Image (cartoon, rainbow, N blue to C red; front, side):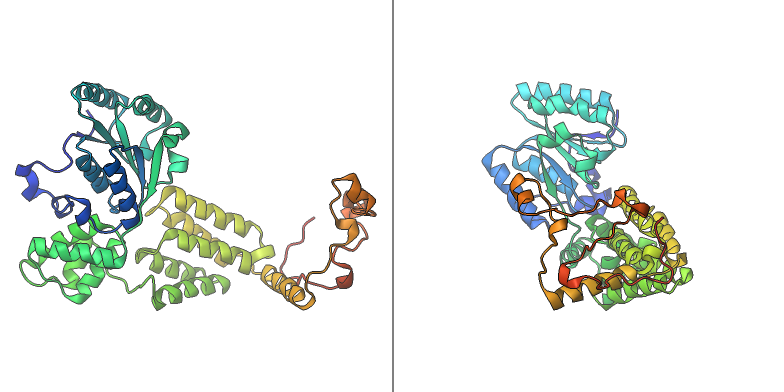
Length: 414
């Protein structure tokens, strides 16, 4: 059978050999670090005695599995956990059959499906009737947007809770508790590297701490121990400080300067240090419109496709479409006519205020409006040679004013 577990925690005899992150799982909501907003709602639900089916959506190490165990404990329910990676419909049927037996004995079953987005439609359909009739209460965990990955009937019968990666102060609190568990000390540089390298993931932080502690052999944990434990070199990069803004500035200016080598270098500096790939993607989309624009309109499509691909596949593979986009933008011809033209239009509006829409351009959906002259004299461009009609489209007082500032490399349509 697939990965099915009736016990949330490792059996008592196995606990000493279980990973630190498993040994330190909170036993109550009070012990849980982070997710305060979600926890408040979940506590109210358990107090009410009615726990609906739930989808927990959040990044790795944000507490999805832990919350499932706490909810089972608070509601005195039997928790059966399966992984959508290894389980199939036959596994689901066995769980449901067991749940029916337990239900007759007065014990409710919570079915925890880890990575529920890995289940295909048929597998999710197989869960649906048993959620509907109350045989099981579903708790699904996913790192992907459930709007796209969970079938609508199942989603409509569940409450979705969005979890966030742990904040730095929260992750530090988790690590400090872990230091007490492994009876270790850590120097400030090593602690900084562990927090940065864990990227808001409590599981990575605790298991990295345990490995670093073992490498230290009873001595103070150093930066080298942490780097070896995480198998990555610590990069100086503060996502809330100057490094964040300096490096993204360097990325965009390298793209603008048509330097593909520098563009990929700064892209890698950001991603390897733990930057959100979707933040990087947004900056590339902006650059495609601001710096390439009409010189190569395809650039915006490439940037948007990279953003969608990064969202769809996640890290670490997201580096590939993002690198492709960065290279394309850096190598593309450049034009900032979109930026300068919008700036000129905004300046004109600030100078002249709210000028009236010319009567011939106004919409005339009713007879009354037509009788008042709305739309009168409008020339339908497609009826004229070249698809251009000789008429004014700006407000009357602004006729002849220029807003579009053509770039020397702008591609003209037609």
